[in-house]
Each structure stands twice: as structure tokens, then as C-alpha cells.
Length: 533
Image 1 (cartoon, helix red, strand yellow):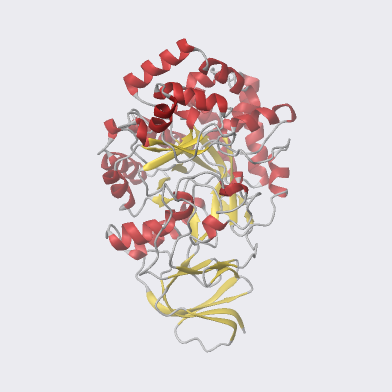
Image 2 (cartoon, helix red, strand yellow):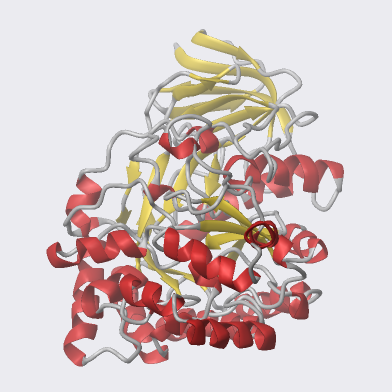
């Protein structure tokens, strides 16, 4: 007897192949059959007629390590059909945390993890202590975290002992089963690293069969050079490289998506194992302080806040913004395109733009920014309209561009329900299927599903997920292709998507007729050699 039988759905298996009507049978957490008119009885039969049954979606780029311990039901993700998340991105990870550096790491990550409890730990103990979750999780160790532990916020090359310390901490994480290393070269302290440091860490990855992902050094003025740098690390070290949330940020780079995609395609054609991912929105999100020149962060949070109170420093920042725009974001059209998302200490009202805040306070917008950062102790988070919708569509239409929300698991209630987060936290995957594939016709439904399932699994080395196949883990999503759509907006972001009826993780139903069952069947996936499982 089967545990679950999904009868009569259109099976889109994650390979990009056309759909076919069949029954999908699940037993003991595995897919045991995909066939027409299955006669075996089942403990639970789900009528899938008129719906698509697909592999559970893989969110290849997330920061849910900041919220999953607070919201293990993973509601904003599981209700999108996401069954596996890759955390520890952009150079940020909660571990390792050395005993004398816990406070420094807490302050550093305050703009992303303001409610999380930090404690001293190595990576093995961090992974071993991971609680039960609704979704599967794969972890990366962050280069920024390693650098912070080894040498603080210093703007210089590491000394030999410091580099060796970073390599040792990376090795410990990889031996514990971490997927690989992520970098965040757009902000301090990662931006202080040069090529030799990154290559030295890349050689450690190669020795362990691990992977490298990068929030590249510049997504605006120097975006093409930054893409080339990421490819160089992968090519030189012989490791897989994932270019995070591909975008062209800042008006001066709008219209150059095809150029970026062609460089990645050319690298792949010559044998480099490289992929990229995207969230399908023209607004980004970041801690507010990351918009400002990176030299402000040298020496840590207290030093930065002291600098921001200095009128001379503000004049320097103002001049820099006038000349080249914002760090990593380039030139944006208006201060109205920067909105406060979360203000943990109440420095500004979520949803208000910098233009509105400055007008209400009768001050210059840059002064408003500095005042808010100081009052919020550096923890303010924002959303920023910095991209061209045409570029977003060009990247979304590329079947090889994978899908990552760059978001955290949140919910409309509790501690993670505060503020107005980016709507991608709730809507990334239904938006790609419903808006970009179905409504705009930029790609077929099998192509859209493959980007977020089989393609992601191949990039990650996932052994038995991402494709509906007999013997594979039963991570499954059932959705209505006619109604699936995101509903979260920038004004009202805490809204679940429509059109997703059932989500199954490791053979257990987590979303049942659109409602969360409370089940927490997710697994922590560990890398063994080059395989993640």
C-alpha cells in the first residue's frame, strides 16, 4: 500500500521535458512510481486533476539561517512550494563564532538577523544543533564571517597566520558537511579581500569537493568585471561557482543583461562549472548602511556610527554619492526609491521612503540616512528600486538562470512578522511561474519548473532531489497552473501566494489544501564529497 497517491495530475518532472498526465505514488518518504492508472491502494489519495505535480522547489540562495530557528514552520517559503533552502549566502553565516567575537558577529549581522540569538560555536556544533524544520536545509560558511573571526574589520591583506586561520575554519565547516563557501565582496570586510586570498580559500574547496557562491564585488559600475572575477575563482581553483542574484544595478548599467549572460554562457562553453541565480523583481534589499562607502565600516560598528555623526564625513559621503551613486547599487532615480523595510529600534517607520523621512524631518536625505542608521544602531534594512524591468525579464527568460529568493523564512505573525520585508520573501517562485512564464510567456512552464528544481539540483550536486523520479526523495508540490501567482506587495508584503494546494517534504504533507499542517519533516543536508544529500 502506498502512503500517498497523487492521481491524474500533469507531471512536470523538473528536467525541462513536456508534462504528461500520470499518477505519482509515495511510500516511506520516496517516490515509488510515476505511472498512468496506478492500481495500488493508498492510505491517502489526492485528486490532482487540473493541477501540476512537480518536484519541490529549491531556493538556491537564501538567508533563512537568520530566521528558521525562530520560525521552523518556514511558512513564507513552504507556501511557495519551496522544500529545500540553501543558506549562509553573501558571505554571511552565523557560524563559526569564536568566544571573543560573538558580540562582533551579532552587531555585524544586525541588519539581517536582528532577532537571532548568537552563541560561540564551531560549524559542526552549529549544524548538529539545527532544530527540526518544515524544509530541507543546506548550509554554507560565509567568507565575511571567517574574515571577521580571523582579523576583524581590517582593510588589509591577511597575515599568513590569519589566512591559515580562515582556511582551518573553512576546513572544519566543510568536514562537518557544509556545501561550500559564500562570499560577499560588495561590502566590508569581504570587499577588503584580494584575488590571492579568495584563491587560497578556493583551493580548500577543491580539496573537499565543495562549492563557491558569490555576491559579486560590484553589481553596478563594475558588474562585468565582478562577474569575471567570480568566474576566475571557479576556473582557477576548479570548483563550481554560483553567481548570486544576477542583476544590473544602477541606471548607468540598465540594458546590459544580455552582455552579462553571454559572458557566463561563454565561460560554461569553455568548461567552467558556473551558474547564476535571480529573484524576479526590480527592487533589491540590503542593510541601509551597506549603501554607503565601505571605508565607513573599517574598525567595526562603533567606529562606523561615530564617523556617521561627523558633518565632515557626511559631506564626503554626499560627494561620493553625487559622483558615482551608492555602493553596489550605483545611481538610482530618486530618494523615493529607497524605502525602510525593518527598523528594529524604531528609528524610522517601515514603508516610509528616505524622501518622505527627510521631508518630515526638514533635513537633507543623506542626513536622514545617517541619523536613522545611528538611531537604529546600524540595524536598519531597506528595499531599493535599482534595476530595469527589461533586464529582469531578460534574465528570467534564460532557462539556465536559476531561482533564489535572497530572502528569509518569515510569517505574518510573531517576531518575523515585523516590518515590511521585500515581497520576494513570500512570492519569488509563484511570481516566476504565474507572471513571467504564464502571463508574459517568457518561458514555458516546464522550463520555469526546471530552473527551480532540476537545474538547481544539478548545480548543487543534490543526489536525489529536484527531479520527479522513482527512488528519489518525495519532495513534491501540487499547484494550479491557471491560478498560481504571488500576492505580496511592497506596501503589503506579508501575503501568501495563491494556487498552491499541497506541498510534501520527505513524504510528509506540510501544506494540505493550502494550510500548514504543523509538520516539520525537513532534513539538514550535508555534503559528502561532491554530493549533497
